[in-house]
Amino acid sequence: MLNNNTDTERELFSKNIINMKIEHINNITNKNIKLLNSNNNNEIIEESEKIFKQYNDDISLSKPLHEMKIVYCKALQNVILSKKKNGENFEDEFYKYEAVVETEKFSNEFHDFINTIKSDNNINNSINEDNKLKDTNNINISKIISKGIIKEYLAKLKLINNGEIDNELEEDILNQVKNYNNELKKLQNKKVNFSEWFENNKENIQNNEFRGNVFGFLNIMNKPIIKYDIRPIQLISLLFLSKKDSSNINSEAQGIFLQINTGEGKSLIIQFFAAYLALLGKKVDIISSNSVLADRDAEDPNKIEFYKKLNLSVGSASKDEYNRNIVYGDTQNFEAGILREEFKEKEIRNGRPFDCIIVDEVDSISLDNIITMTQLTDSFPGRSCFYYFYYQILLIYCNYISSMVEITGKTQEEYLRNTKEFEDEIKNVIKTNL
Image (cartoon, rainbow, N blue to C red):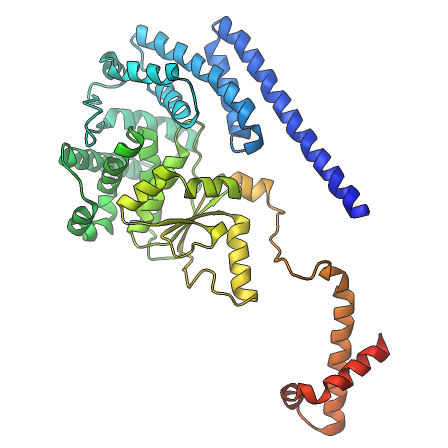
């Protein structure tokens, strides 16, 4: 009864917490609607992004968050149109807007706004003269990312990271952006075949100086699927990650943290980086904050099609698909696989090496769920209640073996080899002592 009551109390507590979060989100949304009417768009954007950062991966809050994102996108529309009218750069706002609309089931008016802005030549002048959009219906036409935009981002990142980005790293990223653009230009208007490209470039892929070209190729392969190019901040993130990794590719692994803000396209960064590592011959494990999100990503038709184009396979740890190049799962999925393999002697990972781990929502795993543990289940319910008796039995058994060794002079190994001969005697000793 105590356990049932405790479970009920926990369920009620969890429901109350969820209801409080929903009420909080709804209150902010209602406040934002009033702000929208009074044209306080920047305040709406700021307040909404705080909420997204806090709750965006909580499945139970998807409906109230969806309502908030509608208001958020309307505020972004107002800012984009205002900046466009004044001839100001509205690239950041447009990318945020596009990212939300692409991932949410919004009405056609939101998608029409994207098409209108993209088809308007003025957007190219406001973003950058070198960043001209061509015929987006051509599957191998991609945006060239200008060094000017990259330098703007790096300048901001330098301030945020307090000198972590030195001049050498900045120059390296700028050179790789040039390689990225060169790869796009080389592949424009061509039917790209992965096997042919890989055969021609397999030696270069291992070269750290070629990684900009690799990401250019990955963008070309992915654009027909998702209909848009990777963004400057995504490319910077990928170049930064691959620089750190590739400089230690054959040495002891060194981890790196990367903070990606809401709307900057974290999922695509993870997807491209996983593909890059897999092309280097690595097995990649992607750890999500929960198994629902992990299975969603592993079964995402867009991701499956992208990886398939690269002759890479993707699977889910919850289904023990460890023979794939890239595996999505949460901590418990991966832990359970290791435990079952080590303690139950089952072939789960099939010799899969621990090459690379990409952790999505690292704060959730290392802070929010740090006390979460994985425990193998057993067909015998309530087994833990018998631990005391097991311990006592073990003590009796050990004492019995020791005493028999002293009396008979036989070795312990001889007794273990002939357990059946004295099994009944042990049972009688245990029965007498318990």
